[in-house]
Image 1 (cartoon, rainbow, N blue to C red):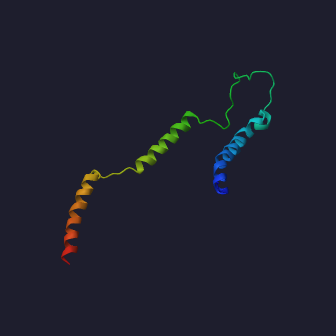
Image 2: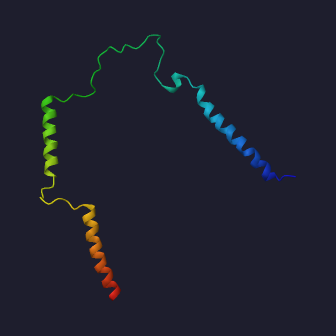
Image 3: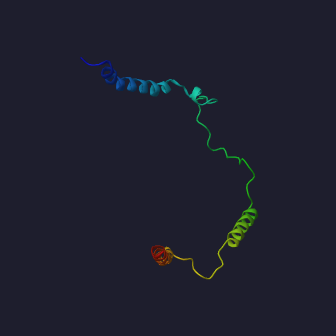
Length: 110
């Protein structure tokens, strides 16, 4: 005879599947008016030939060029001006290796 716990584990997947199905199917009953407030069916197709109006004032060509020049000046101000190239990872590892060897020898000799 099975214990009560074994029987409850047998029905747990069925209960979970039923609960999941109820949650998933619960959203099927909404209408477009409930899902999107203000939406209405007028029976007509929307007129897509109406020119769009801008939400804000658009930049003029002069303003765009001024902004580009200002950004380029800020970029150039942050540029590195040294003539020496930055060390590569291989150079950094060689330096670390040489320092590590001498440091390890000093630590062993002490």
